[in-house]
Length: 323
Image (cartoon, rainbow, N blue to C red; front, side, top):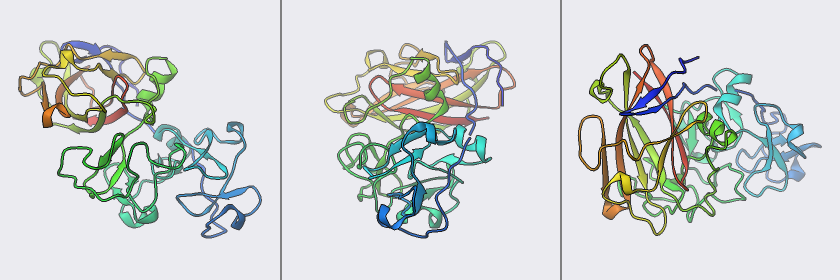
């Protein structure tokens, strides 16, 4: 869906966003059944370390389709596989497909936990599987980014990341899993535009965004004109050796990324620690966690958009918003 490319306002600062789209698909070999090692697969195939089925291997990204265009090892696998990076590329090949964070493969959205590999849990809102008895399907060398691997029991009602360690999150299924990474269109565009530095959880120490909620839209957050409001709340935890200060103006830079990859710093826009209907900044847990409410202001007639965010040195998080 195309959007008017005029300025989108974040309270009082100009920014813009577009709706996330999806594209491209490479599927596991369905004829060889389950596997445990590459030796059990046929020529040109390897045993996917998460799916435990035989999947076509690659020697370089030129071997891969546009949907799964990166040839990489998964969880320190012996073989390399074509991996996806965005929902947009996956759905371009097969409508409705997403890039699975669990397997790094294009797949249909899960509809129940029964369709998730290795006893994972299905988030029916996003169609993504998380948790399970193995590490994630990322190309990070074999473990989830952080001090605790996926599937470790945790308490989701505790302050994030509970026992899960940096770059992880304790989700509502009370299992540790990796935090959101750079796999969303706004951030892909920002990386291409040199507006965002790809997050490396092995070396980075910036704040980690673990949730963004789509709140009731508050028109007062878009004073004047005919702009429409998209109100959201962002939740993050501090990285190692960092504490969120009393005001957002003193905090590590938080940036909003548009659908075209443009960066819009927002620290000077959100209203201090004051709580109101459309904007606030509230540190908690001794400054180790923070809640930031803000309102995006889009051109009249806009009914949905995707908002991309990242703290300096931290992960990227994209959230679809609707009216």
